[in-house]
Image 1 (cartoon, rainbow, N blue to C red):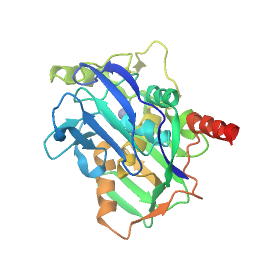
Image 2: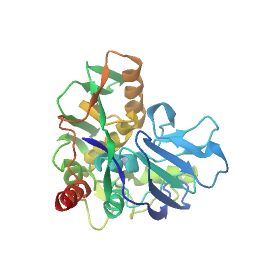
Image 3: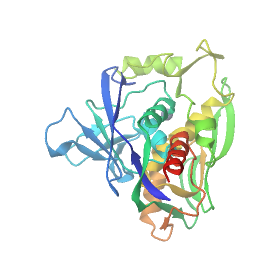
Image 4: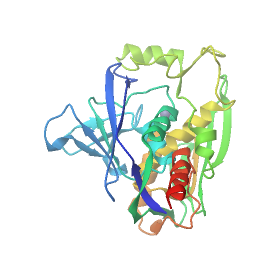
Length: 308
Ligand SMILES: [Zn+2]
């Protein structure tokens, strides 16, 4: 399996969830071993580059925020990172003219569509993966996140909102053969109306609306069209975890288990893993079932076969 980047640049414009500001974003191709990096085009000079890596995570309270040594940040990166993981994109430069990634419809699907429109190309270098070599767990009271060795990339997730319309939801998603596209990518972020009102009072969630989040009031989902999956809530947490874990800098070969985990524990887990050199190893991605088999990759293979 080879590294991949975008065939061409592609842009989008949208509203930021927290600031409510309109931002433009440009997904650009990048060279071998570049990884995923953000570039704040509204900031002059070299301090505008922010690597999309676990050790650049500076805030995880409401979303995952990345920052560099110059204090320049970009927030709410998790849904875009999830789409890039699901599209097998190893190398890309994400130009953005503001401090927060647009929320789009609250899922990863619009970003997947952008990548599909731009196209995906293979590069002349082997793709590497990070294989989990031993169990590693981080906890916070009753909640936890852990890695367990496994032949593939699997996400097990449980959330517990007992006493609300969400209740307890559990799902196990082996990330193979289109599972990300079909079972995860369209799941939207969610919030309770009472929380949204609190956030608004604090100057946050200004861009939040029924167009980019599932909003729950009492026992009801307020969105007119209802849910995209019966258990859309826990599937969105899977989407978040895929994005947060892609900040490892390579796909993971192993099983992730999250019990009410979130951005904070997801990042703590990566930090704990990288701190223990026996917990992981770098392996070639070939022969390992970590491919999400997305549409753009399939189309690319067809095109290559046609010209071969
Ligand atoms: Zn999310």
